[in-house]
Structure formats: C-alpha cells, structure tokens
Length: 218
Image 1 (tube, rainbow, N blue to C red):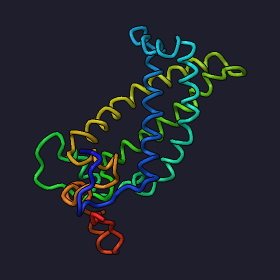
Image 2 (image 1 turned 90 degrees about the horizontal axis):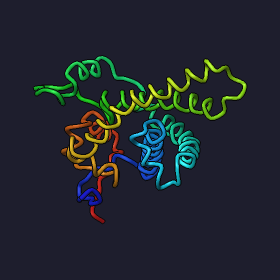
Image 3 (image 1 turned 90 degrees about the vertical axis):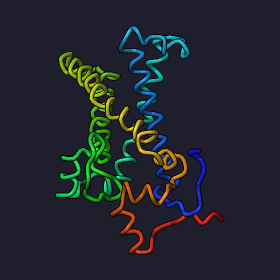
C-alpha cells in the first residue's frame, strides 16, 4: 500500500530527500539498538548476532562515523524549511498541540513542515551533534581528563533518553498516526487531501508559483 502512487498524487519529496531520510533513519536506529545493547544487561542479547559486546561496540562506533555525514546533509537539506519557525502561527499551533491531543476547531495553516516536525528536526540536529562530540571523546579518551570523559558518558546517555520519545512519536505519526504519511516516506508522493490537511500553506504557494508536481499516471 505504501508503494502505490495514485493518479493526482502530489510530489513532496525528491529521490535524494527520500534516500537521505532512510540513510539517517537506519544509522540512527542502529546506533540506538547497539547502544542499548551495550548499556543495559537486559539488552545484551543484541550483541549475539555480532559475536559479542566487543564486536557490537565496533558496529556502534563505525555506524556513528556513518551517521556524521547523514546528520550534516540533513541539516543542510532541510534547515531552510524545517529549521525556523513561522511566527506567530507556529506558536498558536503549538498551544493547541496541533490538534493531536484534543479536538481543535481551527488550526493555523502550516507550511511544508508543521511546528511539531520542526521541533523534532531541531532536536535530532542538536542532540545528534551532542552524541557525535561525546561519542568521539568516549572513543578516544586519551589526552582528556577523567572528569570530562565521565561527563561525556553522562551526556551520551541523557541524549538518547531525551531523543528516544521523539523518535517513537515520529514513527507513530509517520505510519498509522497520520494516514497517508507512510506513502510519503516510500514514494515521495501523497494525496491532495493529505496536503490540504497537513501543509495547506505549502500547497497553495506551489500552486500559485506553478511548481507543483502532480502524478499523471504516465
């Protein structure tokens, strides 16, 4: 179902954006799983397919290296649209929690990304940078004080605790929470009805400047 593009569907994501999203998502999930496998005894079973905790640590470290360009490309690609807030509409949207937690009669129109998505984007960027810096120092502690390295371990752990709830909510809303979002992740297209509901301001601007791409079925 997620792989089907219907006639009249609107293109929102380019092939590059889709691939970058999956690149970031896969490396991020691998880091979380491998990190949990090393951090908690109850998750040590994750190390079994890799031949033990020592190998799992290598997987975690080198996946972290692969995560760096994914995060930087993500920041560069989406900062203009997702890295800044459109005031005062976005503040009003946040006050009403986007209509997700209770019924809201009228919400401010949003652009390509709503304030919730923007908050998640900024959280991933800044927590991601924290994890990169702290992870590098933990991997190469020589020349640094023991106190500093201990702080890096603490910040690394806090980073995942803070980020994980955002990721869970993101996955939920991107699949069953907001019907039609799943198709976007796999095809880059979604319905006009979805656009009118989720990004009406972006849709209207695209129609006005003649840059809207619609699947014709050919």
